[in-house]
Amino acid sequence: MNPKVMLWTGRALTGLFALFMLGASIAPKLLQMPVAEEIMAELGWPAGYAMMIGFIELGCLILYLVPRTSLLGAVLMMGLLGGALATQVRAESPLFSHVFFSLYLGLFMWGGLWLRSPRLRALFPLARETPAI
Image 1: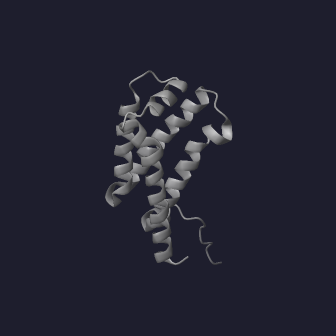
Image 2: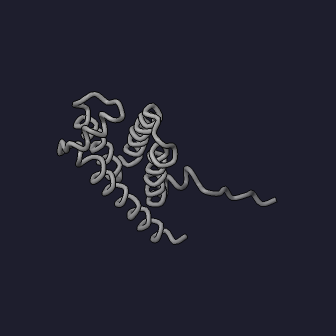
Image 3: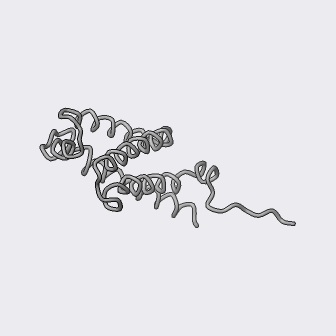
């Protein structure tokens, strides 16, 4: 694949991930929207944790978006998404629509980073070249 196309595809995936996180998760928590606290309560979280989790999500997202810290941000964001997955399991939410949603987001996030980072592609190639005999 053309490196320029990979870079721009990765940037597009990264942008979509960032917009989704900002609009669907971070903003409702930081703006203290009632829906954020209601959903947190349904999942078994005590009142008052939504804003703190929103700040953690925002911090991870900023680290992910800055090229020099994107790998650290992706690792931290994946930890956060893993916690969200565990919360959905504990709440006995539907498997494919709720529990695995964090996994889907994580794959989307890592896909964007993999496409825009030649170093990450070198570390995790899709296929290895077979040595000539």
